[in-house]
Every structure is written in C-alpha cells, then in structure tokens.
Amino acid sequence: MRVAPVPTAARPFLSLTAADLMTAPVTTLPQTMTLREAARLLSGASISGAPVVDAEGHCVGVLSSSDFVTWAGKGAEAGEEGKAITFIAPWGELISVEDSPDHQIHHFMTSQPVTVAPRTPIGELAQMMVDAHIHRILVVVDHDGPRGIVTSTDILAAVARAARRADLEADRPNS
Image (cartoon, rainbow, N blue to C red; front, side):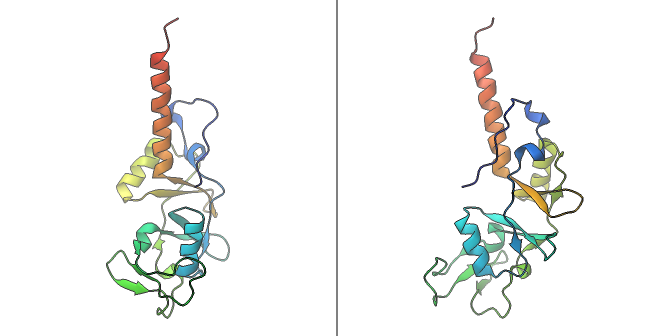
C-alpha cells in the first residue's frame, strides 16, 4: 500500500497544500488499456483508482473502484485465463469484460477529472471532494499530465497527525 509522504516539519494543519499531501509519482492508466489490465494493475498496486491518460500523457479521466463498483466474476487473478470476468457498473448493469466488443477503459472511466494546482490548500481540497462526492483529486501543473494524487485517506491522515500533535502539545508540562 502506498502512503503519502509525511511532511517533515510540523506545519500548521490549515497551511498544508496538495503538494504536501499528494502521492507522487502517480500511477497512470493509458486510455487504451483494457478493463482486465486496469483491474490487475490497480489490484497489484493496492490502489483503488488512477488517472487515465492519452498518448501524450494528458489526463482524460479517472478510473476508480466506483467505476468498477464490484468485480463479480472469478478469474481476475493472474493464471486463471478462460474464466469469465464480470463487474457491476455504477448504473447496476452486469458487464462481462470478455464479451464486450470494446472494453477499453476510456468507455468506463469518469471523464473530466477534478484537478488542482500543487498550492491548493487542504480545506479547499476537502471541500472539492465533498462537493463532487469523490475520493481523489489529481494534482497538475499547467494542464499537463498528473504530477500527483491526493486522496481522502491522505486528508484523513493529515487530520490524524494534527490531532496527535495537538494531544502531545496538550500533555507537555508548561515551562
């Protein structure tokens, strides 16, 4: 499991930015990748979603567990070729990856991903996630390819670190 880097200096919580919280480099998925390949990559990397990029590396979407919802079939593991792989799409349809005439991820991804600049403050990141009902935001510079990713878990980890620091400071004797 990949973990966002812990800021080395104890900075005030609300001064943290996307650059402080993001995981980089970010795993990306080519838009021509198949659902089967994407599922294996995400599973193997222990991540629940990744940006989808075009041939030039520009972000064109995000593929996440919300797009897959649930893998219902067997055979997603390596070495089980020939077994049907299906998943339940967000709209409830049971989709067979094997029978789909065109099962590249660009047909199943969430288009128009939410992106931010590295200097975006933590409060704004959290509000964007809440407003859009999402769990990850891509960090980009000048509409270039994704430089990093901030997840809801990264924000929760920052909250936990800030709370732990506050508890330690409260326990210190006054000098």
